[in-house]
Amino acid sequence: QRALESFAEAMVKVQRSQAQGAPAEAKLGAIRELEASLQQQPPAAALAQATYELGNLKYVEGQYPGSRTAYELAAATKSPTLSRLAQVNVGYTWEAQKDYAKAIEVFQKAVTPLKPGDFLYDEILVDLGRVQELAGQKDAAIKTYRRLLDNPKTRRSDDIRARLATLEK
Image (cartoon, rainbow, N blue to C red; front, side):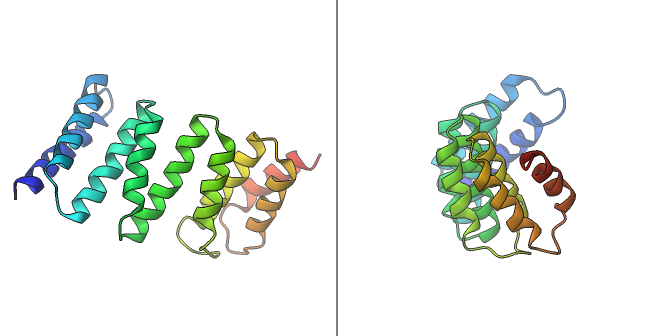
C-alpha cells in the first residue's frame, strides 16, 4: 500500500514538473521522488511506469546514460506497448549522444518483429532512416525509407518522399 502511495505522489510531482513554466528544480525533485518510490518496491505495473517516467525525466535533463538504464528496465515489462516505447527511447538516448551505430542497432532490433500497421512500425523506420542519414549511411537510409513506402497504408508517405528526393539527388 505504501509503495503505491509513494508511486502516486511521485507521479503527481512528475505531472507538475512538466507543466509550462515549471522550474528546473521541479524536474529534479520529480526524479528524486520517482527514485524513492522505486525503492518502495511497487507492484510490477507501477514499477514499469515509474521506471519509464524516470527515463523521460532524465532524458529531458540530458542524463542520457541514466535515462537509458531506466528505459532498458522499462523495456523488460510485460506490457508490449510500454516495452516498445521504452525500446525506442533507448535508441533516442544513443542518438542524442551521437552514437549512431548503437542507435541504428536499437532501432533495427525494435522494428524486426513488427510488420506494417503495428504500433510504432512507421515511426521506428523513420527514426532508423534518420539515424542512418546522420551516420552517413545514405544507401541504407534510402532502403529503409523505401521499405516504408512499400506499405500503402503509411501515413508518412509525403515525409518519406521528401526525404528520398533529397537523398537521391
